[in-house]
Length: 114
Image (cartoon, rainbow, N blue to C red; front, side, top):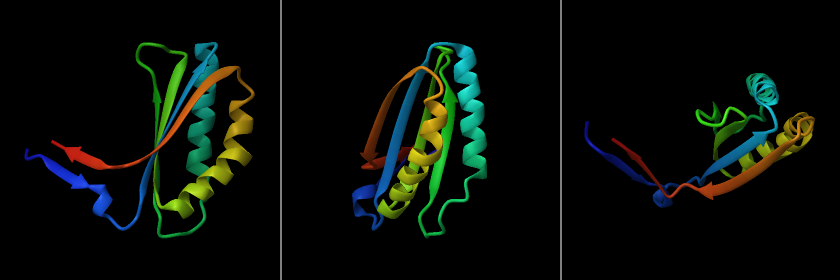
């Protein structure tokens, strides 16, 4: 399969990659939050816009108390909608559990597929 490289700086719409890493105090809390988060994402009727949002929810293979959510957002309008929804809906649920959180927002510079 040939390598495909896309330089995202040339694209018109900014693509933002958000990484959330949550480490809970028990695997049971992690599993509960993953189930709740999955349901929240499936039922969220985000504001209509031309922007796309995707999420990948993952459970760490080595540390069963850690999970990650990789969110891809196209455009600042979608990021603002995501932030509002997250503050109002996701964070109150996550904060029921004792956890440590690391969140990183980054602009996508290049996407490489092989």
